[in-house]
Amino acid sequence: NGPVVSALFKSPTNLAVSPDDSSVIVLDRGNNLLRRVDMLSGVVSTFAGSIYSSVTMETVNIDGDGSSATFYQMRGISVSRKSSRFFVSVPFPVLRVITYPVPVVSSILGIVTGSYGVLDGVLGVDGLVSGTCTYFPSPDETFFISSDTTNRNIRIVYFPSLQVTTLAGSPGN
Image (cartoon, rainbow, N blue to C red):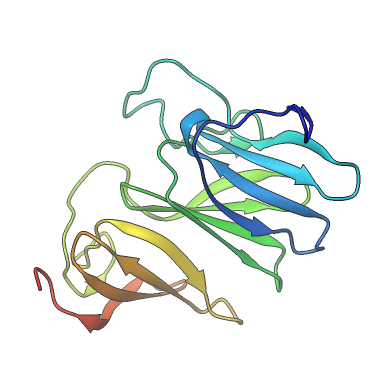
């Protein structure tokens, strides 16, 4: 953290511009952090997440306020200008939501442990996803479009029902 000329990142993977256009939020995958680059002041700070040395199923993807939340192997980030929220995908597959400008992290869909696959249906009941890179919200946030890299297809997850359907592609092809 610090001035942009001296701040260090460890595997910055993806980024999004904040809803108010004042900052860039960076997925610092190597540090398991969301970093904020303030474009006005030129300062880099930790927006959400905390660095931890031991990665277990109990320590990854914990919801909470900015610094008490944890992330692991974040894959993608998208932003909703409608609700001033960021959407971050992680490899379990779980969709995390982070409020802006005060970061509060919560998981709105997905399972940290359990089954993975490519079945259409209600997520967690009979619908399965795997290998999601990024969830992009529709303008009204009634659905998210997801690239499912493991299953090689494009999925739609309707919100809040969590109904999953395949938009394009077929598994294994």
